[in-house]
Image (cartoon, rainbow, N blue to C red):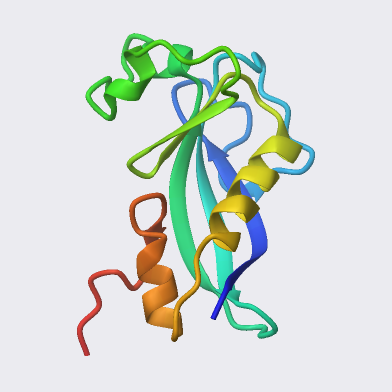
Amino acid sequence: MRPTLKRLDGMELGKGSIRPGLFGLDGYEPADPRSFGLTVTAEIGPEKQEAADIFTFMVCTPDWLGRPGIPTGANRVAAEPWDETQTYVWGRRVLFLRKWNYGELLRIVNDLLSRSKASDWPAAAAQLSPYLAWEFEDYQS
């Protein structure tokens, strides 16, 4: 079973947010493409099915994470130098981008999903856990 992206929304983080609440990311442009922070909500479900669960993660630039008033203990990746060819780095449920690019974000998420294969949906969703927080992660019936 392969997970498929159904929808991607975001919410700006930090003081003075220009767009409160969730909004579609396809037309989003941050005030500074090299210094932004978003919480992303992704609806992801089994391939060839309409059903989807909610997964969340943060997308930001290392510069934004180092701003005063923003927690810096989230991931040391922000402080480490990147290889010149890297446009992104995954942390634990944080995607660091050098600069904002919706097409790149979409490609990165779809690439992550294409590498996940499992026998059932809970197993497929669990494979995404290091990168994305699943709404049913700690659910017990």
